[in-house]
Image (cartoon, rainbow, N blue to C red; front, side):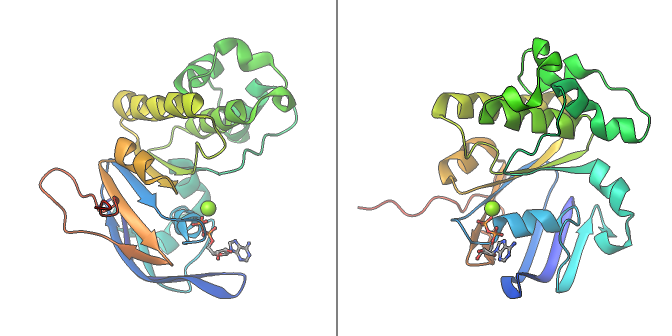
Length: 226
Ligand SMILES: Nc1ncnc2c1ncn2[C@@H]1O[C@H](COP(=O)(O)OP(=O)(O)O)[C@@H](O)[C@H]1O
Ligand SMILES: [Mg+2]
């Protein structure tokens, strides 16, 4: 199992936001869908230890997260945050930053291409990009770590429909080409249906999971209004 959460409670700013969450996330692509404030970002941040639970346990591939070396974990399980936060410098500087810390060179052009950006972007200044382009650079920066798992926090929330479709295609393509597992958080239930092999619904800090079907678990669509 990719991730297992057992009776997890977690707080933000002194208030409990995840209440007794138990979940198993298999290899593949999973969407965690829920409205704003339901605890999606908090849950995602637990998965690479940007946040720690108050109680309960989180395991990654059968090993307690708390027992793993945190930097090694974050290289293998990379998080793309909701708000782009690029460093001053060029796009190439940004994409090469993480690997540069461990003296590894990266093929910036390949990574930009994987993230759906023109390779000519490499030499552009990071502060001269649209939000959608910045989000893609954040994705390229995460891919530079050669992660096995990508955690994506509302990667298309700031985008228009056309750019959103492009990013969704990019994510499906990454899954096909690199076999990376994705855990994607979204408030957009339709997006969850389009992207995920499996959808987990989060409501008020509680996870709602249906019995797994033979092919696909999906509990994300509210009943149609008749
Ligand atoms: N840094 C913070 N300090 C205090 N409360 C926070 C902080 N970040 C989030 N919260 C609160 O925690 C709850 C869950 O937040 P979050 O996990 O970000 O939800 P979501 O990503 O689903 O919108 C919300 O009620 C939010 O207001
Ligand atoms: Mg959030």
